[in-house]
Image (cartoon, rainbow, N blue to C red):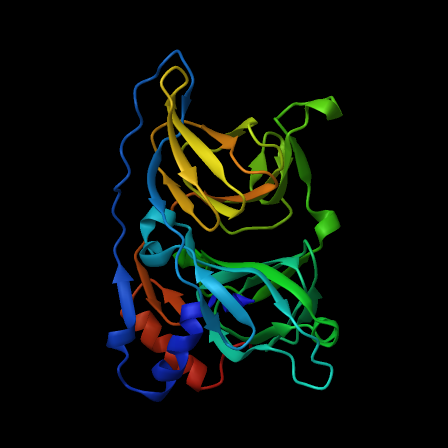
Length: 350
């Protein structure tokens, strides 16, 4: 739902479309390698080090159906999280039945130059777009929408969920497209829960009694298990359940890719550095850890609260400028201006 992951984007859109203050609501970020170089090889295991912990942000409403946390805060649309752009998380919230009323959500809005990834944890999200695609995602399902050269869509609580009411929890991430793919044809991947591969943790465990958690691989791969989503550049997106307090799990993660860890619920401690001299970073609900690109290819996580759940995210940085304005993400200000012209001319979703 672009949860409208647009979260901030949708609220910007009205002013963007009705005023000429284009420059005031747009930014361009030039790529620069701020990651430290890989450390020298060491015979003992080193775990990827935490660079910064982003505290839980304040939630706000997107439309009338999505009360979301802007998870990345001021790190959104920066190289530090590339190829990710933005992340909105709607924590569990009870909605009463509305059998005689219009579903809550966000009305028609455009996108260009990136992809939106919506994950339904509980409740249902319905989607319609200008290419004629529509669908409903329920518990565990994923909607991976490629805006490409332009699409107009709307997303809202499904008709069935609106009638029944219940607990609603979901998230939406925006994933950047490389310059060569920004004007690709719009597309839509509906990934059902039962089509998402699940890896038992720790990696390689064979006896059920020794399983301490699971990882759903939406995109990317763990060990030899590949995720369901087709992506334009390397992207990692794992939904990890860690129910047992005190357990430690090592997660392999590509050393040349940006890495982000988000806590959905519960709590964990991320252990950094050499195995004989670990430093811990404690994270609670909606906290985020950003990692150094320090040559390590392993994350170590210790569970501090029962029934914890985290998302491990990231991918290969796209070493290109980022120009963003509301629901458009391109490489230059001129491309953003052209996106607005094309949208107003009715060219999106064609």
